Image 1 (cartoon, rainbow, N blue to C red):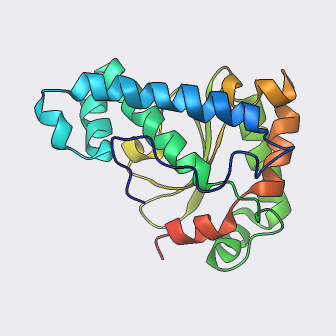
Image 2 (image 1 turned 90 degrees about the vertical axis):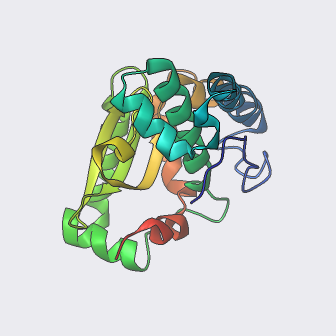
Image 3 (image 1 turned 30 degrees about the vertical axis):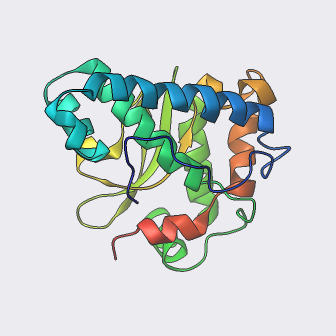
Length: 199
């Protein structure tokens, strides 16, 4: 998916995932946290040659040059823009299509995958993201990634992600991250996962 240096529209109404993720959470998570990353990124690239680069290119440049401010804001903008599409009011259930086939191939069955992904998301210390990604050979793997990190810098293709920064769930779940992770399976967007696969 193409992600620009602007705050994208959500792919659904802010109340569409209620009560699993409430409108108040979107007001803060999307309207304040995500918007702040976009605004910070705009300030960092203003009047520089970076303004014409894609967000993916800025991520790679910030990472390669160890420019924490540039990398963190670009990556968090990209991660959040991707994450909103990993959720859907019509999501949940078991994965169908190619993603379902690859999960069985690479994890044994959906329940084993679900347990492994949930454990990864729940146990990631501090802030970060649980990713489902494809390596260069097309194999699926689950990646726990701290802070703003993304499979893009590991030369892997993002398929799905779950944001486990505290601001993603504290309004609705307080400190009960496992309950938030459990709710993810009721709204996970398998159609989006299928679109991201490299076949």
